[in-house]
Length: 187
Image (cartoon, rainbow, N blue to C red; front, side, top):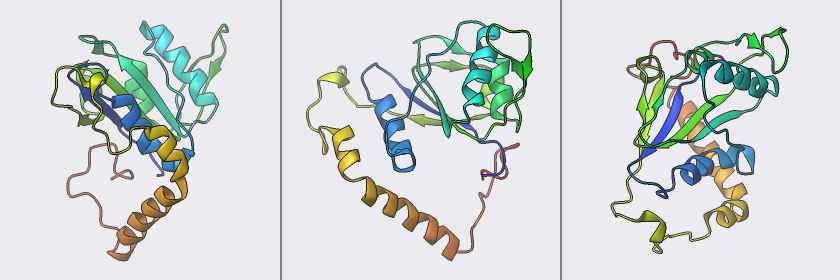
């Protein structure tokens, strides 16, 4: 994708619903491993420095995990990073300005979070609901050890993703009917 990508935000009503695992499973075919995650930084200055540090490593994904219940996910630096090709900010423990390229996909998880108006327009929401009061006590999974299953079936998952892509190409690479503003190349 030659431009910005929106934040894929996996939200859920209660802890232990599996948002982090679901997001990790979505990235697994590409990475071949579980992705590293980032706790939401405290304060706008910390957001900027943390994002610069992460982006300097040219990661394929940046995943913000466990936005606290009731907390507003609000960061001008994050909103800017999601919608730009180059993110400029100050490096950690220095006054030097760095400008890493932004070539990653974005993900986040949280329990009933609220988004700032800036981030709402840059987000694709994914709502998960286990339909029970204590989702961490469930045992009726098709793949009880999902991480192990992902590892054992990695080549089949890659094949499935490539099949979907090939179908999209075969039908003429249709674009989204209503692309999100600023994310046209993603659409």
